[in-house]
Each structure stands twice: as C-alpha cells, then as structure tokens.
Length: 491
Ligand SMILES: *[C@@H]1O[C@H](CO)[C@@H](O)[C@H](O)[C@H]1NC(C)=O
Ligand SMILES: *[C@@H]1O[C@H](CO)[C@@H](O)[C@H](O)[C@H]1NC(C)=O
Ligand SMILES: *[C@@H]1O[C@H](CO)[C@@H](O)[C@H](O)[C@H]1NC(C)=O
Ligand SMILES: *[C@@H]1O[C@H](CO)[C@@H](O)[C@H](O)[C@H]1NC(C)=O
Ligand SMILES: *[C@@H]1O[C@H](CO)[C@@H](O)[C@H](O)[C@H]1NC(C)=O
Ligand SMILES: *[C@@H]1O[C@H](CO)[C@@H](O)[C@H](O)[C@H]1NC(C)=O
Ligand SMILES: *[C@@H]1O[C@H](CO)[C@@H](O)[C@H](O)[C@H]1NC(C)=O
Ligand SMILES: *[C@@H]1O[C@H](CO)[C@@H](O)[C@H](O)[C@H]1NC(C)=O
Image (cartoon, rainbow, N blue to C red):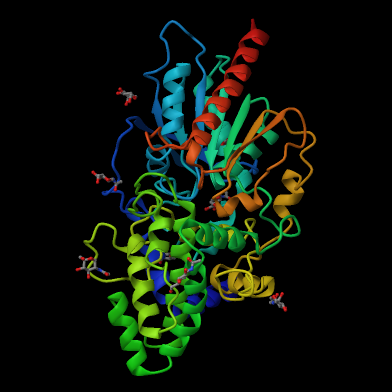
C-alpha cells in the first residue's frame, strides 16, 4: 500500500515537475513572499500548541498554530471584552489581516480584542514543519480538513478566554466566511455570531448550477463598459488556438504579451489559456472602486479599465490580439514594472496559496464549475468529476468526497442555524454560491449591489459606494445586538 502511494507521487513528480518544486520549496516560512505586503495594521504574532489530530485520543502529537493578537482597543476596566475573531483561510494570515480593515475599524468601535487565526497548512502553521508537504509522506495531508481547522479555532478561543466569559464574534471572507458560518453552526457556545462575507457555502454539488460563476463573471464584463468586451474575449480563445498552430503565430502571441517563456507545446497553450481565465476571475473578484493590491496591484474598477481596451469590436486577428494584450496589462502590469509575463505561475504576486487549496479541493472542497461558450465569454467546459478524482488520486493520493460538506453542514437546510450574517456583493462571481435569502429570522442576509468579493470586510475608503456603507452599518447594528444580549445573559 505504502509503496504504491510512493509510486503515485513519483508519477506526479514526473508529470508536474514545476508544481512539485514549488511544493517542496513552499513548505515553510518562505512559502509566500509577503515582502510587498503593506503592513497597515499592527499586532503581536503569537503561537498556540494544538493537536495535529483533534479527534484522536491515542496520539498527543502537536504543532504550533500561528495567530495575530491586538488587545489595544479593549478597555482595561472591562475584564470581559469582546473578541473579534477572524477565521483564517487559504493563505498567510497576515495577508488577510491587512486586507480586512473593517474588522479593525469595528474592533476600535466595540473596544474588542482582535484575533486573526491562521488556517492550518497555510502560512507558518505547518503540522509537520518543513515536512508537511513532503510528497513521500502523503499521510501528512490527512489532517488538512475543515473540522480539524474549526477545532484549532475552538481551542484557541478556549485558551484566550480562560475562565472569563467573553463574547466572541467570528469574521471571515470567502472560504474564511464559510468557516465563520460553519463555526457558528457547530460551536454556538463559542461564538455569539458570525459575519460570513462573500461565503459561497452553496457552491457544492447539486446545490448551485455549476455555470453560475462563469455567468456572473461574464455579466460583470458585459456591463462594465460595453458589450463588445465579452464578444472580443469570447472570440479570443479560438484565435489563440489558431495562432498556436504555427510557429509564426506562437511568436505573435509571445511578442504581443511579452511572455517570459514562449508557448511551445499544447500543454503550454492550455496553461496560457487557463492563466487568462484566472486573470478574468481575479479582475471580477477584486473589482473594487479604488486601486488595491489584494490579488495583484490593480486600478480602481479594473474590469471597466479592461473593457475600455476592448470597447471596439475587433474582426481583425492582429487587432484583437493587441487589444487583449493591452486589456490584460491592467492586471498583469499595472505597476508597469513587470519585465515579462509568467503565465506558468498563476499565483505570482498573490499571497493566496493555491497549492494548499488544490489539496482541499481533493478532499472536501469539491466545488463544481462549468461553462458554456454559447452564454458566457469562456470556453465550453463541462464539469468533469471523474477527471477531478483521477487527478486527486494521482497527485496527492486523496479521494474527494463531493457530499461531505453537505452532510456535515446541512447544505440548503439552515433551519437550525442562527446569528449569522451572510453578506454578498452582486458584482462578485462567488455570490452565485452564496446565501442570498435568509432561511429564518435569526439569519441576516445583506446584499451589496455594487460590491465585489467581500468589499464590506475591507477598510473604509472615500470611494466606497453607498451600498457598502449601508451594509457595514447594518452589520455593526446586528453585532451590537449580539454583544448586548450576551452581557445581559451573563449578568
Ligand atoms: C493595535 O492596533 C492599534 C491601532 O492600529 C495600534 O496603535 C497598536 O499599537 C496595536 N497594538 C499592538 C500590540 O500591536
Ligand atoms: C499522551 O500524553 C499522556 C500525558 O502526558 C501520556 O501519559 C501518554 O503516554 C501520551 N500518549 C502518547 C501516545 O504519546
Ligand atoms: C502520532 O502521530 C504522529 C503524526 O501523525 C506520528 O508521526 C506518530 O507516529 C504517531 N504516534 C503514535 C504513537 O501513534
Ligand atoms: C521527505 O521525507 C523523506 C523520508 O523521510 C526524507 O528522506 C526527505 O529528506 C524528505 N524531503 C524533504 C524535502 O524534506
Ligand atoms: C493607488 O494609487 C495611488 C495614487 O496613484 C498610489 O499612491 C497608491 O500607491 C496606489 N495603491 C495601490 C495599492 O496600488
Ligand atoms: C462595438 O464596437 C463597434 C466598433 O467596432 C461600435 O460601432 C459599436 O457601437 C460597439 N458596440 C457597442 C455595444 O458599444
Ligand atoms: C510592462 O510595462 C512596461 C512599461 O510600459 C513595459 O516595458 C513592459 O514590457 C511591460 N511588461 C509586460 C509583461 O507587458
Ligand atoms: C451549450 O449550450 C448550447 C445552446 O444552449 C447547447 O446546445 C449545448 O449542448 C451546451 N453545451 C454544453 C456542454 O452544455
């Protein structure tokens, strides 16, 4: 059995050599370069020793979970101040702390202790140290689950509270928002409520149509400037395929986009086209009303900028190629300092750890995606679960379970849940898998028509549209009510 697993990993090493290299390189502290991160908010960096396996009573093995801590806002006269607890997601926790300014602003207002807890297997919270992602030890991936992660959070809160009764509010965005919601569902005695911002808890099998993400992305591009934008992008896929059929065409692409490595094989072409898709998704997610550097440095309303370059309908191949290249530079070269385009590294410049995420996709986070070119600007791609399973087994020795999350957290049945705010921006492709209608009176749904991916969680900005100001104000009122109720109950 063990020998077989090793051979699977050797195969992976042969077929995905570059990925494996970054895997081994990315096992420890240096996993992601946060040098470029502007550290606007301050905190102490601490660690808590937690079990590798919370569900075992016969093994005491532990590791250090990292968290960020700031109790400056809490009043010394209040022995039981609120804790605003961010449930960390797929990346270095400092990155989320710096991009969730709303938590800091509200903590100052509510005189709360701020805690940002890192998700295990990300950043510096590695259960097996530098051996965590050692491909010859696939059993090290066994504890990379939502449930172990929620237990980490529960243990950290238990430790922080000691014997004090403190109202804890969970905050999270995106996958972190899913964790915040699930944490409140499973540990209502630990958190009085959760703000789940842009949390697509229904982006799972049979809960949401698999094409919704691509449809929303398309509609964002269609309405950003004019409809030629999506027509041009929709046509570009065939053009790239055509050009990649000849050496002259390959050179044309490499020149137009300033590629670091020219497209040499069909594998390269696939990587390039996948890269373009990823860029369009990231543009839609970070389509904020001011310039930002969350996923990459981008101008204000970057989708509008992109579509400005695509405002004319291009029938001519060379024109279309150049227009797409200019449009893409809004994302890839906003700083005008990028020497060449590295389409083989989707993650470049971002602190999101797609390698860790790819592993979660292979156990619980099976989120079906598909597209049809007839009603989106993307290539037609059916959802292929079998292919996902085959790749997961081949790459990590993991067999995905598509209904695991639904079984554990209820799917569409949220009748028993309470004190969760689900906020969603309608410009966000992830809103398609979000909770847009409250299942009961104790759950609040806040819609932000002009919002991209968890805009409400970000720091206030003069360019914020009224709908996000309104959302934050509503969120604060609800949180105030939870806290008030908590203190009434303990007195
Ligand atoms: C907590 O944040 C406040 C406000 O940004 C800052 O003044 C303070 O130094 C921080 N405290 C710690 C311990 O970093
Ligand atoms: C776990 O810890 C307990 C208490 O320290 C110890 O008695 C026990 O032997 C440990 N078990 C293992 C498997 O290490
Ligand atoms: C406990 O778990 C660790 C990590 O999985 C493993 O290396 C170790 O062999 C286990 N110990 C026992 C006594 O099972
Ligand atoms: C991975 O584990 C093997 C077997 O224990 C060890 O020989 C090797 O050095 C480890 N590799 C890394 C990159 O740590
Ligand atoms: C946003 O633009 C301003 C003014 O041009 C600039 O000073 C700032 O560095 C930019 N911020 C980001 C995150 O790109
Ligand atoms: C698309 O571009 C053409 C020029 O190429 C222009 O005439 C037309 O108005 C544009 N379409 C829209 C919807 O703006
Ligand atoms: C980025 O912009 C700079 C300055 O305009 C240019 O020299 C460089 O070629 C661009 N890089 C890419 C990848 O397009
Ligand atoms: C895409 O949509 C067209 C038109 O509605 C339909 O005929 C085709 O079967 C769809 N393709 C897939 C893969 O769903």
